[in-house]
Length: 138
Image 1 (tube, helix red, strand yellow):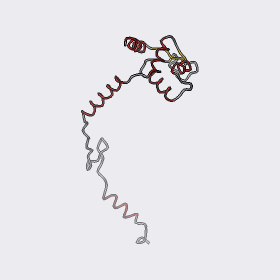
Image 2: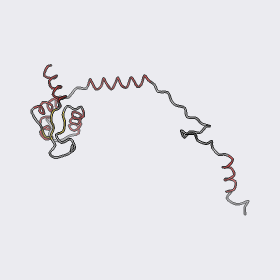
Image 3: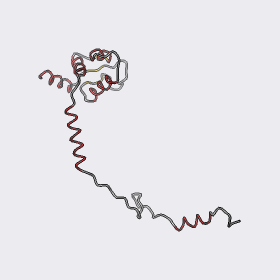
Image 4: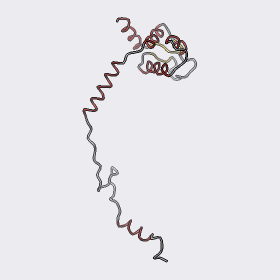
């Protein structure tokens, strides 16, 4: 019966003979050390330069400038900003553009803790006022 068995005895015996090396502190085996890939300093610097240039070069669209000018007159609701921007519905483009103005801190929420509140309004920040002054000087 043992000769035609499952061979469990042989499997256990082979495992005890072929144990892998014990891992060191970093979880690597001594037989296969981890090779650290060198960082490419040029790519890191280049990426930072590109991000800085993109941030400086991005201009506001005409409807975003109109939103800034409307907010300079006082707090505005989302629907009021829709009409100022020339939209009838709250499209994806409008949402992204409005969020970009908020992210760039040109406008801010009047209720920052509840961005989806039905009572939410938008107002111009000091940075937004400076941007509007730049535009009027041109």
